[in-house]
Length: 223
Image (cartoon, rainbow, N blue to C red; front, top):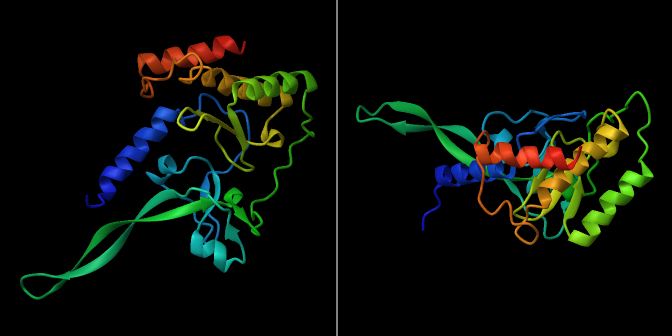
């Protein structure tokens, strides 16, 4: 079957929306997705295609920077338009945009590459709350849900597809309480995985009744 970039883009967007990547609320400081080498921010549909914020680069850019992509890391797709020329029936040249794609990796998926983002310096040092951390670690250990922290990211999300909670690091939050509130909220979503309460077997589109009910479940469970 021929590769259809438009179909792939549509499916990727649907997958991201079904994961709930639109944040329920944001109580942390983070960066939108940008290219590591050019420092240009990603725009438009790429904000939905990329799973979290921070710096992204291609396999070649990682190599040119003296680093490399870690083994078994999966890339994310971005798209862009490139102008190409084509001759018309009158033998004149006509330029038109052609949609292309590229595969990129987050800087956290690489070795030997240091982030160029300015370090986040909160007004106060955010220290973990031992009791809250113990509850969170106890749940994730027993349930088997994976937890991934992405420094500099601007998103907190639970992905039922790979059963993973992705969070900014604790130092990006306004307070430790906000960090654990967000962590527990995403953990509450993870209880709906098919291996647990099987509440998320049916995808819920953003803004739908099912989506709203799931957000209420997560809010009630964490308050």
